[in-house]
Image (cartoon, rainbow, N blue to C red; front, top):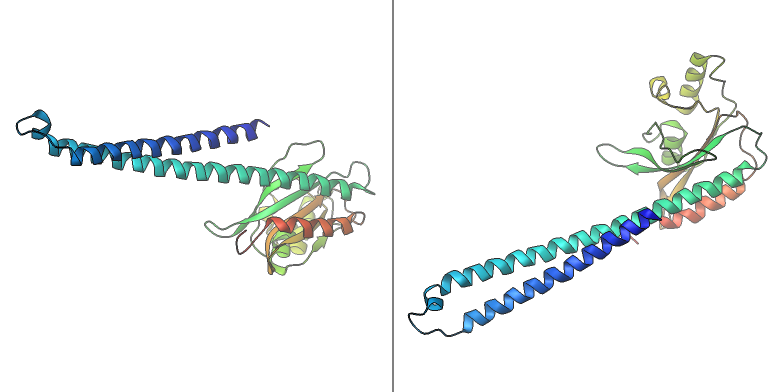
Length: 254
C-alpha cells in the first residue's frame, strides 16, 4: 500500500512538473515574441540593451524547454516504475497461488519455495529471482543466479521444457555426497551450490514462454523442497498457471 502511494505521488509530481515547465516555456516564448516586435525610441534604456534582453529571454526559453523535456522523462520513468512494481506484486501473488496448489499432499514440515526467475542480460545473461513465496517466511531473493543450462532453472530456460530432480541425498548425512550428486544431476558447480542458504532435495522448474513467441522462454517458474519426494499433487494446475502467466511477457512489445 505504501509503495503504491509513493509511486502515485511520484507520478503526480512528475506530471505537475511537466505542466509547469511547458507553461513557463510558453510564457518566455511569448515575451520573446513581444520584445522582438516591440518598437522603442532611440536613446531609451530598452533600445540600448535590446540585444542583451532578447538573448536573455531566448536563453530562458531554452532552459524552460529543457525543464519541460526533463520533466516528461521523469513522468515516463515514474509511470514505468509503477507498472513494474505492480507486475512484480502480481508475480509474488502468483507464486503464493502455485504454492497453495502444490501444498496438497505434501508431508508436514516439507517446506518448499516457489520462485520466478527472469533473465538479466548485463553484463552476461543470468537468470535472477524477481519474485518468491515461502510459507511463513519473508519474500527473500535467491542466493544463486543461474546461467542458461545451469541448474534446473537454466536447463528449463534453455530446453523450453519442464525439468525435475527428486530423491537427492540429505545434506546433513553427508555434505560432500550431497554437493557431488546435485552438481551432477543439475549441471551446476559444487562451489556455486555452497553459496546456497538451503539444501533442497527436490527441484521442479517450468519455462514461462513468451505469449507471442513460443520458441523462447521469457522466465522460469522454479519450485524446490527440502523433502526428497517429487511433486505430484497440483502439477496439472501448475502447468495451467504457467500458461496463463505467460500473458505478462511479450517478445515483440505489448
